[in-house]
Length: 145
Image (cartoon, rainbow, N blue to C red; front, side):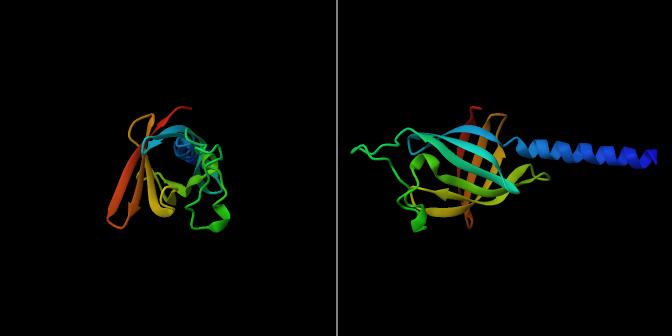
């Protein structure tokens, strides 16, 4: 009986440790793309993780109107303000490889989606890799919270 309890405790510790490692991706990041600064929040969503813009430095158009997600192929999302766009959705943690994968990244500048993989370059720098076939593009987000 003691061995069974000890094994269950050890299993619980392993599972808890893996969950803590998976949640390491959660937080707020500074992202720069094409010279535009933004803040992106990564959080748990269902069985995976999601990244959503929460601030962008060019939110207003020259005429004073709010910049919208006008290139989104889903017409129902074209009225989403630029500071509320979901960039990454449905990534899950792969503990064996220490990466978050299996989801998609959305590029609001083109309206296209790509496979995505996330991993930490160091303790505060998240590498975001968008992939299309054998091609990929990396960008780095800096954790600020």
